[in-house]
Image: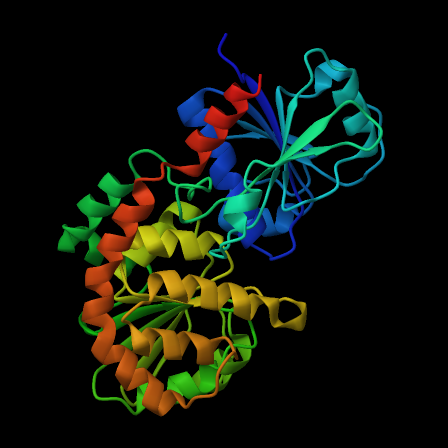
Length: 380
């Protein structure tokens, strides 16, 4: 039997859909492509269900697409060493149940223990990727594993066949029309500039809607139910529930249900411009090869602005309109949407050209799941 054969992944949902979105994609890929029996512990099954409708929110234990899913309700409990996996991954520095850690220390051989960190383009990550940290009391070593954009990091999540599936979809206009029709879009919507909108509540959506409505070309904005709820509700003049739509000026807004991950990928592939947030949709937008604007998860003391600038420094060189728009969208720089939007609109062909070059560069690092398995095997 190849190593590792079992792996346990612990996820606490902080960013509603981003944390579980990443962990669910990683769990599925490790099971499907590396033949590893994965157990995913997650504390919020309701958020999980929004992106994976098969989830039973009442079930303490369930099997989903080959992955064992356990509802993580407590830090209590005792575990036997054989209940731990060959690998333990804590996502984003979550504390593991003390009883589980004790059981890992009694296991022979001991598990490879990783802290899978959040994605950032900051340079310091290269010096910290794969660094070990000794447990202060137990004979255990934890390794930091950073996703990233350079060969000195773990790369980005990308399952086998993703790029080929995207290419087939984007080269098939009929398949795109069928997909968009399922979401309630008609011919006029499909002919407009299609924009998906996924952001945190503090994004300046209302002035952007005004700029789109007063613009020179038709815009069809697709927004999941519950996202930018205040601005969408004001625009609609009514409840922003899935299926609601309204046109004002050049702008039509459609409210969508939350989509399963695979359908969300198709939405990103079908749109001309994507607004994404957090980490999971941010990564998927890069593989979509379409222009995108990132709304980064807010942190104390505006640390997220440093992360945003670090990414723009790598991605948006020579793309001044994208950089200015992104900084304003994230509150890192002042600006007016009625000026920023036309500039971004004019730059989108150039952004689209550079998206392929960027994806090729990141592709050469290898995918996060494979790099993670390679690292684990080297520490057996």
